[in-house]
Image (cartoon, rainbow, N blue to C red; front, side):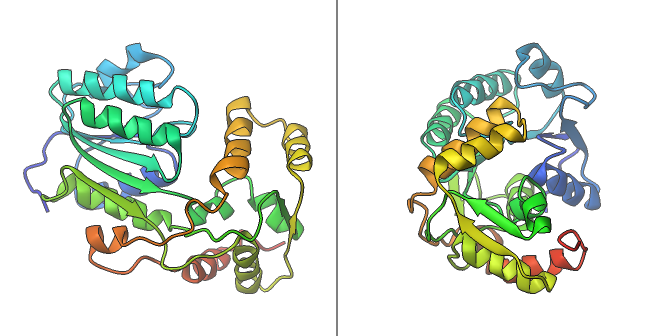
Length: 277
């Protein structure tokens, strides 16, 4: 543990899945935190660059989680501009949450490296928690998850592992210039994942593969924000094509232990009652 950290660590996306958990870990170790969000103080908004400078003042390091997702067009340029501003303000320690198998995410990684920062990259694919902290909660409650995805295997990664990796990268030496691809310990199809959730929740939950146009129509009916609708369409038409159908040792490399298994996540989360009618 780095006991010399006396200035706040800025967490962009500090109220999101990974940022909230990272903030909890830092606070539990009595390390100062600044939440970078539209409701933060000072306010931070990716779409308003004038908010970036004030949020960077006096901080020691930054965790970068891009909203709505680093896969969206223009994300790379925005992340690059932020990284350059951070370095210009003397904040060189930057940890980026990146996307696995996403072209825009890899462009953002290159721009981060080119900024002159002391960087660490955490490259992840599908979060286990997308089933409990996102748009899939409702269909799981209804007993049927309908998605335009085949029997492709996905290395679902637990957000707690990501937050722990970010915490270690920000507070311990030896992680500058490292790229960690973080995956779970096994590949599961979406049908497998839904079956495990059903078993953990003690319910019969079906998985149905549907055509892309049917999925697009369903998203339109839910009146999702345009950027979220675009992102989901991108994920299911491009990224979930088997390109991430491999396991990596990223969690072991950064944390020195095996990653959390999906079944452990499912059982722990089911116990909260979120998937129970």
